[in-house]
Amino acid sequence: MADVTKTLRSAADLAAAGLIARSDVDTIEKVAARYAVAVTPAMAHQIDAGDPADPIARQFVPDARELLSHPDELADPLAEARLSPVPGLVHRYPDRVLLKLTHTCPVYCRFCFRREVVGPQGDPPLTGEAFEQAIGYIEKTPTIFEVILTGGDPLILSPRRIAEVTERLSAIPHVKVLRWHTRVPVVDPARVTPDLVAALKSAHAAVYVALHANHAREFTPEAKAAIARLVDAGIPLLSQTVLLRGVNDDAETLADLMRTFVALRVKPYYLHHMDPAPGTAHFRTTIAEGQALMRSLRGRISGLAQPTYVLDIPGGHGKVPIGPDYLDGETVADPFGGTHALPERG
Figure 1 (cartoon, one colour):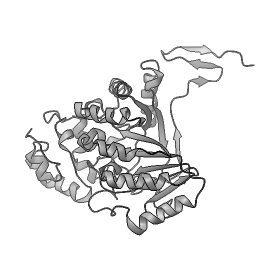
Figure 2: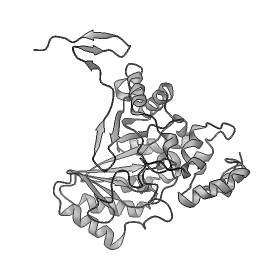
Figure 3: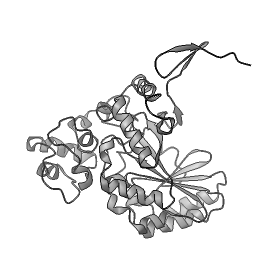
Figure 4: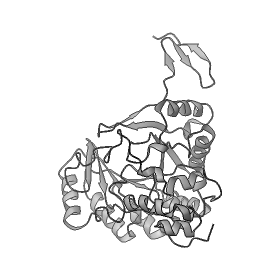
């Protein structure tokens, strides 16, 4: 693979870097015309171009199958438009809201459930009157305990802008938690500067960072250092992972990923079942397969490393745990395949 020094944003860029065949350029251009493309140098250098099943390439390099649609796929799988009382804000649960500060990302995941609205042709950043309207809604809704900053990826914003957002939200008395959802520490770790870390911190609200990663090979030395800068500054990190066919849908890969999170002081949080976004069917597993994987993790890795397997019910009906059930009538299954009578209940 050629040395990559800038983000790859087109089929021609990918071909020049050796990540797709030149014979595939025309097809991949059609994919890129519909869904945004960006592969940072950090991720491009982790791809084994000689491996057609490379799990890093599978996440970021466009695939012709993205042009195929299926009847169950939805442009807005979680009905965020319906649940948006003001631009840029989604209010699904009583005590928390999503605040979408930008629709731009440092990389564009090929399975993204917001793929129809992110990218250079997506909505502009949430600034000016639209931002004030969102802040006003939060101020006037005292049930909002937590604000989840998302996008796009909010950590591509400047430290100055992040500090402004932190300050405005921290000034709202009933907002006690700010949670930033990001891929930046892994895919573009140089952005995690001391200024950015300082911009995230708040004297009045608890700040968390939810880090999205799907395979242990994403954690370069630079990514590990970026994560350490956040944790060492006192910012707790949680993980988010999507269960993806061909990326992490086997027990050893998933266990390795969860152990890597824990070793880096990132608490495994959610393992998401794939949302039915357009052109993503080749990534999907069945729920039964996901439950079997979760059952295989129990006993294989410590409780500290166990994520919660969840389904965001299509149509905006909320997120629910869908892990395996160990109870069957009057018996209980152990992590090693045995079954036992339940202890007598008092």
